[in-house]
Amino acid sequence: MKKQTISLNPYQVLVMVLLALLQFTVVLDFMVLSPLGDILMKGLDITPSQFGTVVSAYAFSAGIAGIIAAGFADKFDRKKMLVFFYIGFIAGTFACSMANSYHALLIARIITGLFGGVIGAISMAIITDIFEPAQRGRVMGTVQMGFAASQVLGIPAGLYFATLWDWHAAFLMIVALAAIILIVILLKMRPVTAHLKLQSDKSVLMHFWHTLANRTYRIGFTATALLSVGGFMLMPFGSAYLVNNLHISQERLPMIFLCTGIASIVIMPMVGRLADRIDKFKLFAGGSVLAIIMIIIYTNLPPIPLWEIIVINMILFMGIMSRIIPAMALTTSIPEMRDRGAFMSINSSLQQMAGGIAAIAAGFIVSQPSKAAPLQHYPVLGIVVSVAILVCIVFVYRISVVVRKRSVPATAATPEHTAMSIE
Image 1: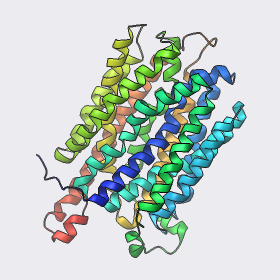
Image 2: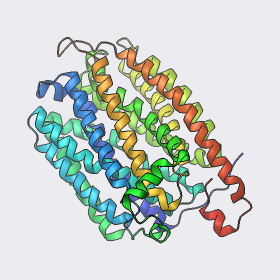
Image 3: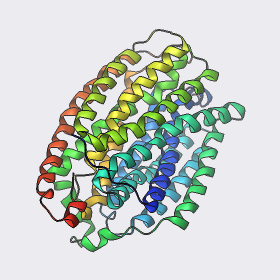
């Protein structure tokens, strides 16, 4: 059944655009490692296992930072929290641009993760505070466009600079853009402090514990952790798989990411609007089935023409986006306002840690006898990811049940209460 949509006011549009641009830089910082994977492994003389460790280092440090930040997340103005961690993210990314060895890059990724991994959680808390439930599908779809834009603009540009100069230039590009976005946030974004009036836990540790101990919240944590497994297992080795298994040259890689990103930019706003109009779980389940089918196909491909690879990638990302947007819209409806910062921080932390474990596991599953040899056991990753998607469906269904139950009393409440209620 269709739901009535609520229009966005000019300030909400501004916040949505700023968070989308911020998300673009944070996602690009992670995403750019995938197309640079083959260059990094050859240039720094590192193995697939070491590269998996580089990817997981960001995830684990982000997870640790999320746990530490959880107790403080609802104690301060969310804008100040966002600015603090974004500055640290910029510093970490600059350190990546200066790295000249495996260990230097590893340390830089840890620094970047300590700050960058918390930004998504703060952004989600801001979205939940500023936007009503009936607006969040559109907002999530727009903010998640940072994922697609990183492929359309960021990854091709990063690969171009990496080819023109070297891979360090890709990270310098991110630093320059992030600095501009930071200035605009400082000048244009208002404080986000409504949650400060609702705090009951005086102790930071007690606030963290009460959030973690909530059984309903734990369902959301588990679902989000499972949601991240696929990306962390498949994407880090995406470029190496395309180059060594499907025989795509480095020069043609940007075309694949460009076309896939353009398709995602078209798809995500559509999915976001659809998530505000139909049952979010049904949309998620449909996207999950499509994703499983395409993952099995993709991970078992023989060398095929470039256009066929592009089409398969487009359909695969359609399934992935149809999972992420409704799942996040549902998950952000779980916590009460006073717990949102802590919930989002723990949620992001467990998501990153699960992703880190997945990246390490992928590094041990995938092997490469020599630098130019095809990756071995890549189809096994497809099976593992597909199983994780099936398990995730169960937990997202449980979330949808909780959200539906909470929406029942809200329909009989006053307009003021209804506006703040959970879908």
